[in-house]
Length: 104
Image (cartoon, rainbow, N blue to C red; front, top):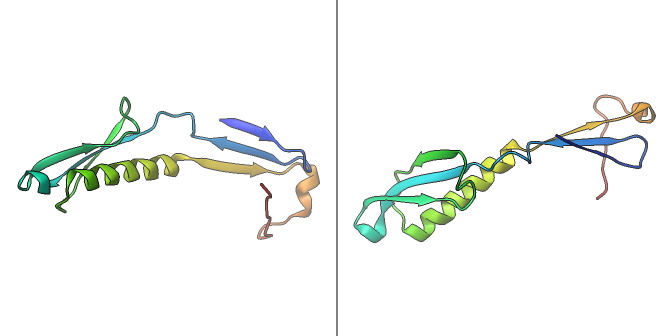
């Protein structure tokens, strides 16, 4: 986990999950470029790490399958990121339910 201390009022932003290896996607699909024979598209991300296997019933060409595999890998990576904000004693002026806006 990475912690970044900001200058404003003892606010600490903690981010985690970004140092993990990216998850790749292996998409199996009916390939329209090969008379509906089974095709496989691999995402660029996560080529050496863990892979999610997805079987699509939707026919598509190899280019569309590759773009879809890349998009699914990006979504999997984004879902792992998390952020937690902790306020110091100066931040106690806020109560549960208060709306706080961060600049930057």
